[in-house]
Every structure is written in structure tokens, then in C-alpha cells.
Length: 144
Image 1 (cartoon, one colour):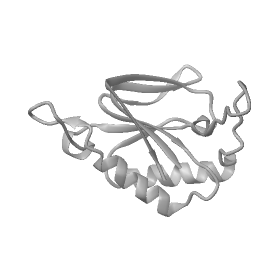
Image 2 (cartoon, rainbow, N blue to C red):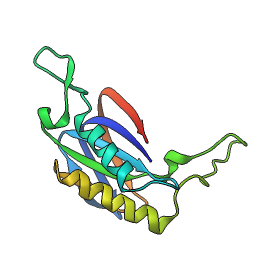
Image 3 (cartoon, one colour):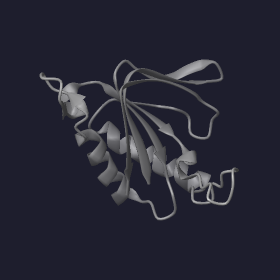
């Protein structure tokens, strides 16, 4: 499982010209799954995300988690995190988990995350336009 974390100002996701999720500030998560991922890995990475200290404290030092700082999360399914270009210029996605199981785990991930913080989501499997104002920029890859 991979979660690309971006500290964000305004962010939104649009499907078929309709905004289906948006946040004013917080984190944008791009989430991908591979074979062997399960609820234990989801719980581990949710804890990492909500405790990741990448927001500024009163002195401007990245020392606060999203729970300390405030805001919400925009979670987007992203199978391309498992792209493999080792055999050429056309990415292979063979390491990405298949749709049905990946969709189920994505839903579990968002449910687990929602226990701690407000979560907006994209639409699994849809062609989405994701608008992100990356603050910092701060982008961190978490993997389990």
C-alpha cells in the first residue's frame, strides 16, 4: 500500500464537470493498493497520516499533525502509484491491485480515516480532475 501525502490549501476533485469532493486546507492523499494489502496495513498507514507532523507550529517549524493544525483530507484512489517503467517507456500496472479488491480496501481506508478527521473522496475508477494547491511544497510518500 502506498499513500502519497501532500500538504494542501484548497483542493478539489471533479468528475463529469461536477465537483464531488473539496477541502479548504489539510491533506490530499493519493492512495494505491497492491497484492497482500489488508486492514492491518490500512490501520498502520492511517495512523501515520494523521500523526505526520508536517504543519507549522507557532514558530513556523513543521511540528504539528493535521489533528493539531486542523483541516480535512481529500482522498483519491491512484493505481498509477504502482507504475513500473523498468522495461521501457510504457508503464506497466501489473503490481496494482485489481479493481474489486482495491475498491473495497479504498473504502475501508476512508472509513478508518473518517474515525479521526473529515474526509472527502474522489470516485474510485473514474476519470477525475484533481486540483491541488500544494503548500510548501510538501509531498511525502508513505508505504507499508
